View (tube, rainbow, N blue to C red):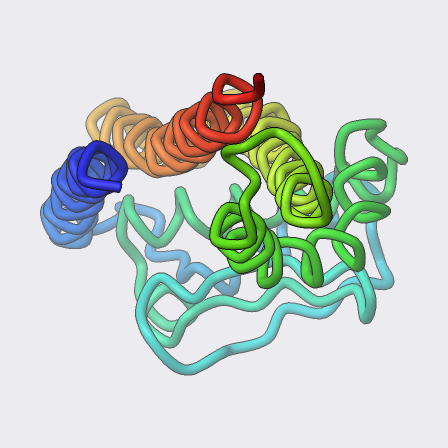
Length: 231
């Protein structure tokens, strides 16, 4: 277990560093005000309109970095600062979330697959580690008996969550690429504003990459504990 704590600690440290860097980037680019004066709400509405999407609403949601697209009710939810302000960071976030709306409208395969896995992962991610640890306590290390199969079930659930994390990567990177392409092709931002938006989205994507690598590292650790110790 000591090695596991070291692994989790290392992953948590990297995640914290990337998250802090992301917050720093967004704080910096929040000071780069757009010359066109368009708020995040206006950016989002224009991108949706330019892509022929008429049935998606742009809403304001409380908190910071709480921005998301909800495919269930077709809403682009922007945090209050993004919704109301006109800066490079707000433009990047608003366009990114609209990128998900465009994916949904075009039935982007990775987004469809991710949406299908949400109900399964929402349950399995909460139970997997408890089943793995409980199985080990029941004697999974001996490679036989009920404990082993309980831990294997937990490992399968953990594997589903890990797959979900990696499926999220193309979804997020593609949404950013769509956002940046639209911002550039429509000349929405001045060169320095565009550079800020691009940098902000790159760091946002890295948070998902760290999460996926962390999930894989945890899965491999527990797999070695369960399967590597079988007689």
